[in-house]
Amino acid sequence: MVTISRSPWIKIAAAAWLLAGWPAAALTLDEKIDILVKAYPETIAAVRDGHIVLRTGAAPVVIDDGKARDHFQQLENGDVADSVDQLYEAGPCPIRPQHNVDAGRIRSEALMAGMYGDSAGAVRKQLVPVTWFGETLRVTEVNGVNRALEKVRDELAAQPELTKYLTPSAGVFNWRRVSGQTNLSVHSFGAAIDLNTKFADYWVWSGGKPGRVPDYRNKYPMDIIEIFERHGFIWGGRWYHYDTMHFEYRPELIEIGRQSGVAACR
Image (cartoon, rainbow, N blue to C red; front, side, top):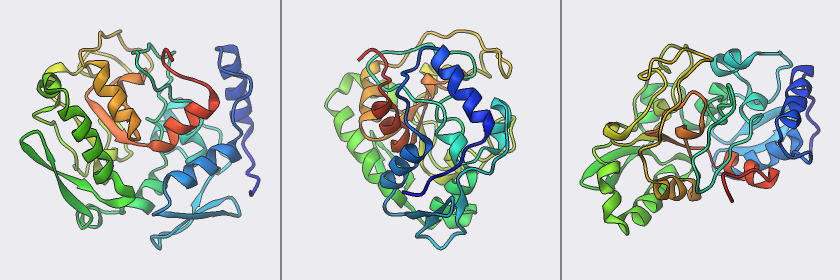
């Protein structure tokens, strides 16, 4: 395993995690990157000289560029190390994240583009149909996202009382930037799905401001969240800047959280 250096900013962040009550035996950055590599065998070949080497032919992606960023700078332009810094808590209960804890909302756009495509046209070429409760969604087949979503669908279909929360879907592929930011949404890569907006809470719609959002009361049954998480999708309802209709394929974060010993009421 290649040892990856980390900036002093993360040492400060790690101390903050401990003070906030996170487990003392937190995973190292190297261990988190090992999990990341194993989560995407189709597109990630190796770690070499502090970079992620991709099978897609895209340029290697730096893991840690050594730049100290605050939370909002990480959201706009985070590197891979930033993207795995906060711990995602999967489980059967809704949680109220601490201030600016948005585990999974921080992403490496370079890594996403390297895996899924760096333009709308490149991503579209890899979209495939997935039937979804009377609809047909176009989802990327890269990293098996379409197959994972089909497994979610099949489990959800066993509970027909949940259908009203699932459809109509508010969308999957949409090449666009995150609202109010310069970075691309995961919808741009065909690896995210929004559920029925009738039951959604979104921090912007609620009148929140960056770093200051009102509380919300979750309207989606936790069975839905558990099933999505079981198949590698994280839920936007676990973010301080919440987006409860939103799920995106980030299996590495669920496994990193599990191995770090964090969970929502397990």
